[in-house]
Image 1 (cartoon, rainbow, N blue to C red):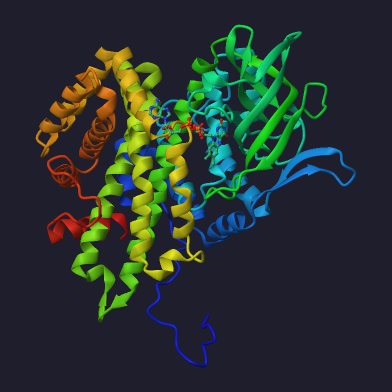
Image 2 (image 1 turned 90 degrees about the vertical axis):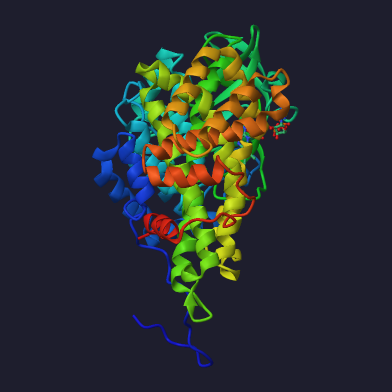
Amino acid sequence: MTQPSFATHEVFNQSPPFEDIDLFTVDQPLVDAVKANGGAAAERELSAFGKQWGSAAMADRGRLSNENTPKLRTFDAKGNRRDQVEFHPAYHELMAHSAEAGVHNSTWTVNGKPAGDAAEVIRAAKFYMAAQVETGHLCPITMTRASVGALAVQPDLLARVMPVLSTKSYDSSFAPWWQKRGMTVGMGMTEKQGGTDVRSNMTRAVRDGEAYRITGHKWFMSAPMCDAFLVLAQAEQGLTCFFMPRFAPDGSVNAIQFQRLKDKLGNRSNASSEVEFAGAYGERVGEEGKGIRTIIQMVQLTRQDCAIASVGLMRSGLAHALHHARHRSVFQKHLADQPLMQAVLSDMALHVEASTALVMRLCRAFDRTPHDAAEAAYMRLLTPAIKYWTCKSAPPFLYEAMECLGGNGYVEDGILARHYREAPVNAIWEGSGNVMCLDVLRALSREPEAAAAVLQSLAAETKGLPGAGETIAFIGKTFRRADGERVARLAVEKLALLAAAAALNGVSPRQAELFASTRLAASHASMYGAVELESGDARALLDRALP
Ligand SMILES: Cc1cc2nc3c(=O)[nH]c(=O)nc-3n(C[C@H](O)[C@H](O)[C@H](O)COP(=O)(O)OP(=O)(O)OC[C@H]3O[C@@H](n4cnc5c(N)ncnc54)[C@H](O)[C@@H]3O)c2cc1C
């Protein structure tokens, strides 16, 4: 339909909306990475998901749920506590679509066991596509999926929860979880005096028959309308993990009192609360005193999702930038055909292609870990390294993508400003940058042989790639230093780059060579486009990124 024109001017030389596309099939690096990591059989399913999430209707839901942020209703009109958070209907629709596609649970069987085959890879491809459209709602989605990892240490509780958690239904009603069609689970660890150092938690748990009464606070507890939370509190034997439902077993509302919602830089569709527990009902998960060991099973999975979401955000930035550059003319030539813009976009495409291959390779390790010690070692050593590198590279990447759209990139009508505000949170939560580096060092010192085997296999997979040998030598030398902590960031970044080159080599060897020659053999400049690629290589990268 032709739009009525302005009286003063015609509208032209603006790119058309980047909507109603299949987010899967237009993304050749994703298609190839899914295939290389065992997910080829799911191509149709992923294409259906890609079409749904690439639709204009879904983009609109993303916009609406971020413009109409959640509201805390602490009290009712008569002063009684209500402690409910209201979300825009678009947010609930996003939740329902993610749940329907199993993004919150498809890596588990109905009994809470790992689903096997390529379940992690397939779900990751969905998570990556959904992140391109709306990331805030993925917070309860990732936490719900990850909670099963921790609940597994308490089989009786897991058996009760899974019939509700494993459905493909999203049920937003405020009701006891056992009466619902589906449920979501959040997590409460961070307190005012410490987030990284959860041992400093002051929240107390006192036995009350078989259960516990929990008293204290959490300084950050996201997605407060979840049906239950895994919470850390100090019990008699030390820090312990608890399952804290919104309703106590007698059907009364549990004593979970929200103080206020955080006013955040981004992640605005998602509510993050400050909360007090006034003798709240909780059930123990795992042994008393083993709280960190229990909840780390959940955190390992949310860290994986932080990496996937970061790459999804970058992919969206790249796709929007490339789409715009192919339609926008400057000095009688499309931006995409200007040599300097081509240099910027192709360097960005290389970064996203390597990052996509890397996170899908990581997900293959998650798929195979239950039966394969080498994959378990890969997962243990590389999850923190990959979270570190992908999450920290997303904000500057999105800034560059935004700039490719000029002024249009900076305004809230488009999605890039939202992506840019969203990106830093993935590096901060679930263990911030330094904490990830320290975790890599921990893996190296606790399981040195397993870590050495991972490095050896990365060496084999990158054999012959420019700069790979020197990178491996540097990593080995640096990690052996007694003062390794001081230089951990550089070594962890190089480890992630090496793993990315190896993963990319298994997907598309020519791009792996380009990646290695610009990132391993040479120091990549801090700005995109400051590398020299042959024009044929640059074109191939851009064609793969968006046909
Ligand atoms: C939007 C949002 C939502 C959140 N939702 C939740 C939630 O649902 N549940 C929950 O439990 N938490 C949540 N958090 C909290 C988040 O997990 C913490 O903020 C994070 O773990 C860091 O803890 P902290 O803020 O206490 O910072 P600190 O622990 O004080 O860390 C500050 C900085 O110091 C660095 N650092 C820490 N230790 C070391 C060290 N030994 N050496 C060098 N550097 C170090 C860290 O990397 C970090 O950069 C949320 C946070 C945000 C921003």
